[in-house]
Each structure stands twice: as C-alpha cells, then as structure tokens.
Image (cartoon, rainbow, N blue to C red; front, side, top):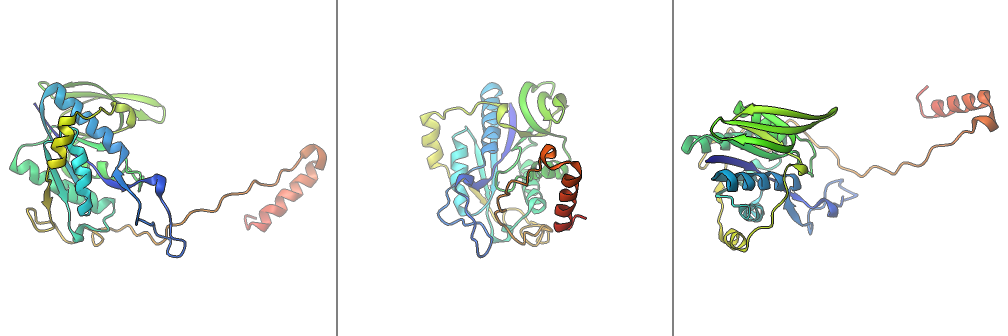
Length: 272
C-alpha cells in the first residue's frame, strides 16, 4: 500500500494568453483556467500506482476559491483526499513562498496521518516555466528529488525502492532511489487514462478541505505570499518580432568592403 502525494496548480490556458498593452500585465478576465498539463501526468502516474499496488492519493493545490474545480477534476484520477490552500495572505507568492507553503502543509499532513512514500509534481507550470517548486519542496522536506522523469521502470513497495528514467542533456539517466522520494514528471512518463463514469460522478460531489493561513496550520507570515517572495515582476510584455538581418554577398562585395560594412553596423548598434 502506497501513500502518494500529488501537487497540482490551476493555470490560465496559455492558448488564450493576452497582455494588456497599457499595464503590461496578463489579462485574466475571460481566460479559462486548467490544471497545469504536466500535473495531469503526475496525477495519472499516481492513479496507475494506486491501481497496481493499492494505497491512497492526496492532492494539494494553492490558489483562489475557483481552484476547487481543479481539485474536483483531480478527483477523477481516484484521488482520496483533496486540499485547497486558499487565503489572501498566500496571494502573490513566488516559487520560494509557494514551496514553503506546500512543504509546511505536507509536513502537517504527515504528522496527523503517516509519511508519504512518493511525492509527485509536474516538471514545471506552463504559466511560469521555472521548474523550481518541486525541487524547493523536496529541499524543505529533506527528501531526494529526481527531475524530468520520463519512465517508471520499477517500484518495489516492500524493498522501498524505485527505478526511473530521466532526461538529461546528454540523453537518458537510469536512477535507483530509496523511498521516500520526490519526482517531477514529463509527459512521456505515463498515458493519461479515461476516467470511468463512476469517478466523474464521484468527483462532482467531492468537497475539498480548505486550509487558510491560520487553520489548521499556523504559517509564518514572513514566508508566505507577496511578503515572503523576494522575486518581483516589474513588467510583462510581448517582445517585438525580429526582422531578418542584412545579407552581405562576399563574392559580389569583396572581402574588404564586407568587413567595413560589418564594422559600421556594429558601431551603429553600439557594440564597437
């Protein structure tokens, strides 16, 4: 029996992202929200492991009240416990504050129940693309982390061992680790299943537990939300499309003329 923890995030659908040209901020009104796609693969892997070995899946997310819909969708992946971290004090959190809030919640859950065997995260969120929250949570929990996992080769609950394949710049690494461990999932790690009708019906009736800033955990106010976030975004903008550079024909212009033209262009751009 495995005790599995999956962290998800509700994000704007990036196919509909628009930017306010005056303020430089994202326009969120009228933009549909979805579960971060990489988190879907983490949920799918947890569902696969539960079906194969038995156990329990706990899903947590931090967000506004409407994030309840993301948790209900997560319930379709046979999730047993759903938790929403929802409080105005959590708003504006960067990856440092987010990892603190999630890790603190996970520690609390382990104190009132039992430790998790496997923590599953998507490799990154499509709205920020930092890939920092999973590693940040692992560091705070003091557990090993394996990022960019594309395949689960073996999991042995009795020996408490896991073998996974992960992406690296040079190719693929095969890693064996002892549980507990935190992994971040790529889309290749598992196929997303079709949810049975019974799970869909059950999910629509599920009411997630709501954790606020004060209940049932007491968070450090200096480490959550905007106050606990050293990262500041001063401006968001769409970069101008680059135009094609000037083409110099060495055969027609001659080497000396081409060199002189390049020097002039570099001087105009302030490079020389």
